[in-house]
Length: 500
Image (cartoon, rainbow, N blue to C red; front, side):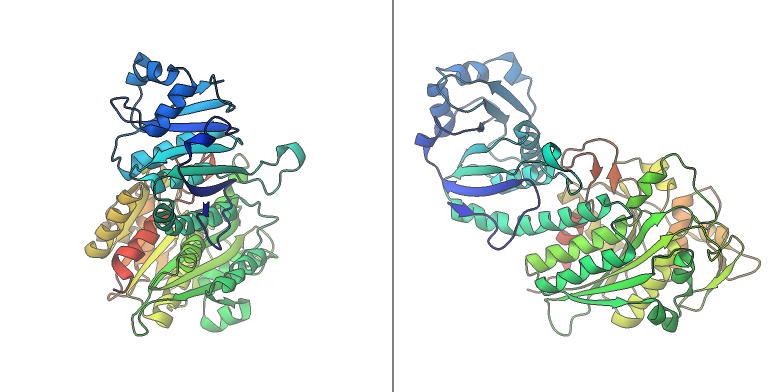
């Protein structure tokens, strides 16, 4: 048997293995056995073996109304199959050549049906089985770091029996690296704030050095020297020290300018002096979601040894009310030199990002810059939980990102920028206000950030407030942190920034 991952260790509770097809093992396989039928209900050799063991029950199901009503990617379970030791046979309806979304949907359906049981999938020579395994891995994730005893999940195995296991392993291994990046992001977003402090976050990123990532942590003294007054103003009310972590993966050409990824890392957001309502404040452990995505992308790139130059920068702060906290009406000075009148201390993410974005441009002169942040509730009003808000000053980079997001089944929708929105940020006392009022709140937030983008820098702002964490299951993620953006950004790097 071939382990898919080489030196990778999946944090999804499923160990995925590829093996040569051996139909003699089907009768005695424990747990569950999965077979794939095409849209006409035709049985391949693996399904025919299961059908014989079940005394034609699979054939009868393929001719039933229940099968006819299934959509591509759907799954139905046949419990207690006659002639087999398995607890159930899972039947997947899948075209002979499915698209990526359908294959991953089928894998996710297997993950839901499998629970904690071992699974044997009879894949034969079908296409997109690596994507099916990717869907199963993504949906099989469970954040259980703080569960004990009977609540801790059991690690289960998935064996994919196929005609060319070495080839399928080679196809899946880079996907597994990306899945690891998604899991890293989900783990970070899921952690409570008493565990994932700014210091602990930085420590976890320093561990990426073991994968070849160069990591530098800038402390408060260094941030003050650099003039990051906007970022420091956000964290000055907390006992948790503000930090900026710089991660470099330089796998591309030596003289190639890097792509810069910048993430908002507010490890907990009370709103500061502009205190949030108590109801739902517990969800503000996810306000570091942008930094989580940047971290996940950097891990994925390192694990798959991407031939590209990418720098990831995250601003880590905690927004707390105290005697030292920034007040509404205060004026702070950014690293760029612009002054900002703080109207609302709960509009803090843009203050963090503006300084880190300016540092990224001054230090690396990037070929492009993409920032990610759980920035505004307004973007949820506009787009719900299906799409991130996309803003850009460069059509080419933006269109490439939107194509990457679509290819990876991650919803994204471009929203406008314009002078009339920018005018909402005018201040009588400073160069700008940090909020522009209720109308077009996600757009005025993007306009604020655009003021800190150099004219020559292709830039995208991703407002991920609606997609970073969700209140119900999605096709590829359980309720909670999704890891949205890791797959899309990894694909963007592959398609646009990798050498050769």
